Length: 112
Image 1: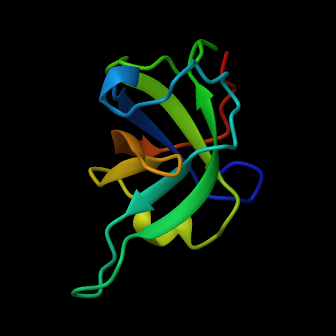
Image 2: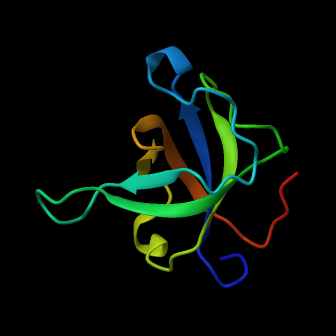
């Protein structure tokens, strides 16, 4: 938890722009992407949850990048149910633009 809200560290793989990924780099601290987690209910749609995505080291989210280390700072408490270590998710921006995996629960940390 960071600031009383769920937060995790994760690694992201972004699709290249030519394969449906982001068209341009997105700055660290973005609130524009949703994270889609598989629902625990059979045959249910994915659960989409918003988060601030801070790239560790402060770089932008660049289309085609792999293994990008980030901190995801969720604004919904329900994220604690879905965003657990080892869980995979899809990055969503009106379409799938990448994937990620939660690596650990984040403590009070500072990115940059």
